[in-house]
Length: 156
Figure 1 (cartoon, rainbow, N blue to C red):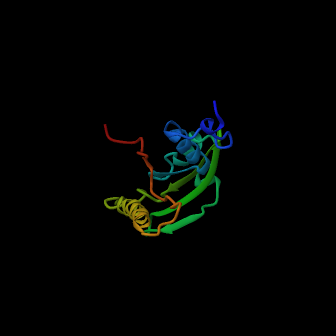
Figure 2 (figure 1 turned 90 degrees about the vertical axis):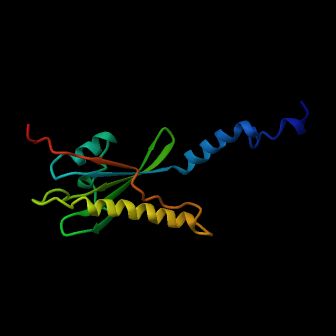
Figure 3 (figure 1 turned 180 degrees about the vertical axis):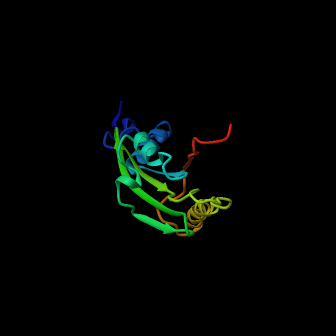
């Protein structure tokens, strides 16, 4: 095969069939962001579950929080971020904890600060995406997964 048809070995195969592999390689190199929120009363095992899920100490109990925002008198959000790499895939894992959620006698509106936080993160991301001259990589603080823990006690 002539050199001008074979292409350059420096860049590998270039063609429409290679687009998916090129996108996958680019994404794997940049890494992923995954934000998980754990919600529930104190003592339900939120930190233990997150530590077990990721096979390491990633909960707020085992680390110092890098972000803390007081939302109301009882509920404040704490987030801890970690870089996790497995089989060449990088992931920035952020665990958002809600200590004090549901610990009061009257929990009628205790969900409002959490919904407010989730909505604010989505609005913040949307504003960044709508900029004419937006950043090349927008920090993703949206909640991708919310796990709600229920107490095992109840009326039968």
